[in-house]
Amino acid sequence: MKPYKRILLKLSGEALLGEQGHGIDGIVLEQYATEIKAVSDKGVEVAVVIGGGNIFRGVKGATQGMDRVQADYMGMMATMINSMALQDALERKQVQTRLMSAIRMEQIAEPYIRRRAIRHLEKGRVVIFGAGTGNPYFTTDTAASLRAIEVEADVILKGTRVDGIYDSDPEKNPDAKKFETITGDEVLRHRLTVMDLTAFTLCRDNATPIIVFDMNKKGNLMKVAFGEHVGSLVTWD
Image 1 (cartoon, rainbow, N blue to C red):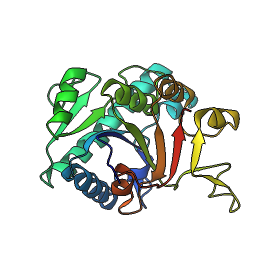
Image 2: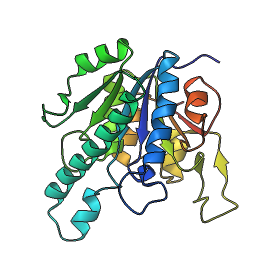
Image 3: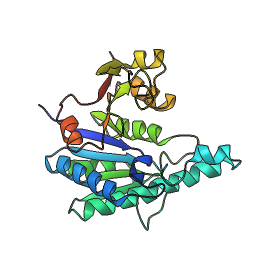
Image 4: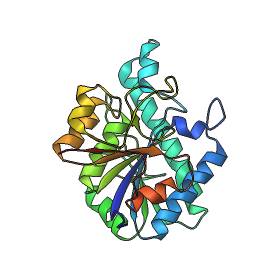
């Protein structure tokens, strides 16, 4: 199979919880770093966006009475904590990385500059994009779509704990039907939850394919990055 040249991997913050109720599970972090290193070592250019839901979710904070803008900025800080943890895990495996933040914090990350990000990727560095888009009211899914388009990634790989897109929640409905391939129009028509609407619209307008797959199964990232059919593919035919 022919590998993708450049991928953007979107990880949820909740995935880092592992078996814990809060924070970052070191075992999960180690596994993710191992998977990313294996793909990078094969010459695939890897960018990563990771959420912050294991630490703080802006929307949840807002529903509990907090100012939405303040809550969203707190959520952006949470993504930076996760991004720094992933960067450390990768660098302990001798993977060259760059952490770029949409909010200026020079002591811990480079400011996000598109051309510089592309140059890092071309040099084989794993680039982690933190702090979302730098703006409130936008999710990390939207940040992933935006960054993927900006750095001209071939595909967005959305790593989840579910092995694809289903017509209903497979954790609640054992008879849920999995889609191997589905068009973006079908996702919208069936109101399936793949990404939020803003993120999804960005992908549609730029014909960026999305693959939803189980990141927790060892070897899956390598298979997806090398074009094997794993998970569910969203196309824009």
